[in-house]
Length: 68
Image (tube, rainbow, N blue to C red):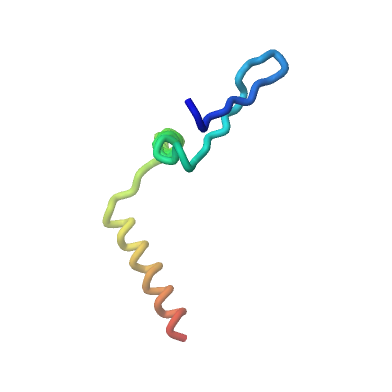
């Protein structure tokens, strides 16, 4: 596959990969999304209403600071 190069150690084992993002951006984004999702798997969620209230408070604080 063009646009992908493997980096190997002294024994020839693949240790890293270089990806040409101009050719394979969509594949990289899917891979990255999977990593982010997996890293958040055990995080405790919060109710939407709580999230919404927090974001609204942040937004209002930002607007107030900007208007001064």
